[in-house]
Length: 115
Length: 116
Image (cartoon, rainbow over all chains, first blue to last red; front, side, top):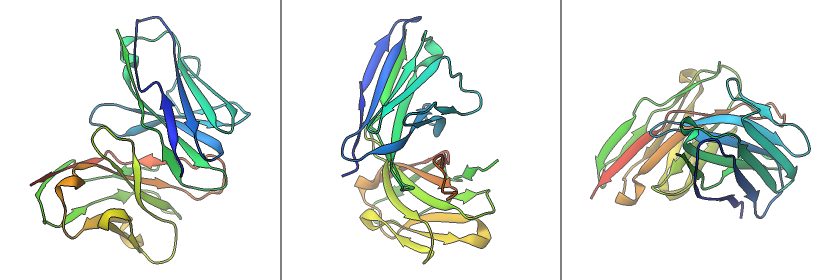
């Protein structure tokens, strides 16, 4: 149980285009989902907390107009990287927390490369 | 601000050697503590967690961790590592505030390489 999927697993896009990444909790309902960014050989950096039915809460320094987050249902959150630039190239990971629990379950990540 | 420190960035061991990875956190109040593992090409998986009670926590795959409140530490241990333990290990902390935004604060990770 407690499986989280992400789609796509890998995406290459051109500078200036937008990319949408999906995060789904497959066998549980997630009131809260989290989006992280992981740089090579570094830790996970929390970007934002996504709450179903409300606006996401962004961490300091994360541009909310650039990284659009939508959490329309209890099993799906999306992250859209708008007007992507090469510096946005990274590994994006989502996690989902089962309603009422502290534990987070992580997705496999999405490798974004902006050319 | 709350932070998590992992002192060992890269550890190389031979099979059957004992492992101890350090983790210290800065927050002085009540915390929940986690160790996650990321095997090559795979997603983060929970190894073990501490919320309350016995400070010696047993996890999966023979791992354990000890919470020492006075030292703000939660070190990960395994008596005898295997080649399959080669992975990156992350310590993480969250505060059990009960709110919807319990954020995990991750350490920088320790890359463990076990040589056969």
